[in-house]
Amino acid sequence: MEEPDNDDNVWNKLDTNITFVYANSSIYWLYLLLKETDLTGEHPIKDEIGRVRKYMNDYIQIKRDQPTLNIRIAKNLIRNALWDPTNNLNKNDK
Image 1 (spheres, rainbow, N blue to C red):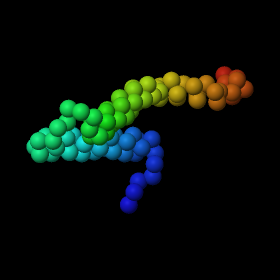
Image 2: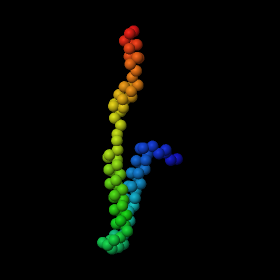
Image 3: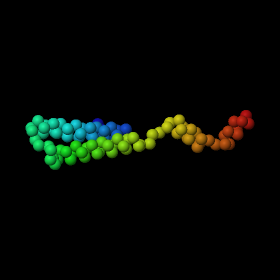
Image 4: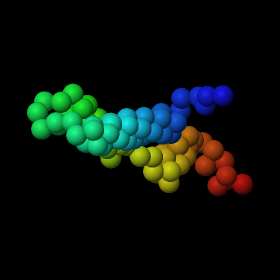
């Protein structure tokens, strides 16, 4: 059964797919080398590996630049946003 697409699951799927495609292309490159195929010219596998490298670099850049949640600051923000001055006055009067 497939998990729902939350943020962590999407990043894991993306990481897995990019890694799989890069590994598959690299293995195919090695296969062509073993078959003594001339890869010095414009071979489509070079374009494929270059495309996957570009996606890997984009993925790393996006992952590095994504915002993170500071839980302490978020708790303070919520607590202060919900603060009601009348509640505070009632506590001091008692």
